[in-house]
Amino acid sequence: MESVIQKINATFKKAQVVDVRSGDTVKVHQKIREGAKERIQIFQGLVIRTDRKDSHTSRITVRRIASGIGVEKSFMLHNPLIVKVEVTKRSKVRRNYLTYMRTRTGKSARMTGISITSQSSNETSFADKLRAVLRLDPDIVMVGEVRDGDTAKTALQAALTGHLVLSTFHASSAAAALSRLMDVIGQNPLFVSAIRLVMAQRLVRRLDDATKQPFQPDEATLSRIRDVISTLPADIERPNLETLQLFKPGSSVVVPYGYKGQVALREQFMMIGKVVEVLAEGRRPTTQDIEAAAIASGMRTMLQDGILKAIAGETTVEEIYRVVG
Image: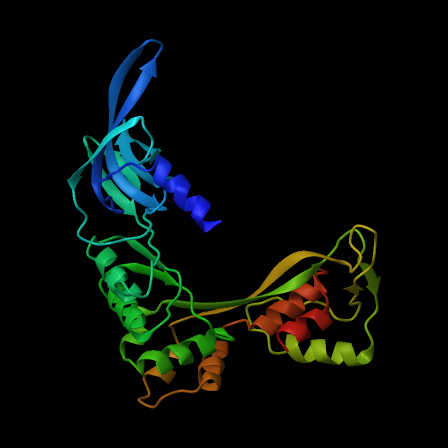
């Protein structure tokens, strides 16, 4: 199979093709045939993607702004109709994939968003690429995942210099996310100033509305629900448990297990009140300390959110405790 691919590549590949990288500005000279006539059309723009460089199907995607609208075209470099690809400006930062969204103001285009992904471990690190993006001074930065201490420190510094940084971090709860961040970069006084909101979520199965069956819960289930409801923040309305009706999964040919789709259980807290006090004490707080402070400041936990969704008939109590309990 490999020999066949090599023969195809040798047959259709051009002898020499210019080395084009993502981020370069290029002019693509393409032969256009209109009946018996031929003309050369030039498309100039920014290379936002390169694919399969070593293959005869090597392709680049070029983007330019035309009349305030972003226009993208893909070109196969070994296509006989591609006469020439001219690199007019080399990118200083190597990137594997870029997406540019621009707004037009008069004759100038202002960059409003960038997306990057790490290409391979033997090139520059993810944190280096994040720093390269920050040099462009974006208003909002979305970091797909804080995966190491260097990235975490860079994201914190960016948040302190006026950028809105959105990111994800693997942890079992919102409080645990803050604890894990301390494990990665150590206790840092910048937390209080840099972090505004911490949110955690888990997914549970949603009951199928067409097949779910109502039932009256037993005393043991009611007791568990009362214990959770009694700890709700004061500003959340407490449901009436006297005539409580819960639901269990039914069954049908289409939905044999009684669940269809998912629903998110969420908890979140802001850097206010007791949370700030716990972080400012000087000692390293535990996950339990942070969670207790967040609850005291008004946080609704994932368990509480799940029980309220079970009471509303969106899922079951058993499903909540399976995932969160």
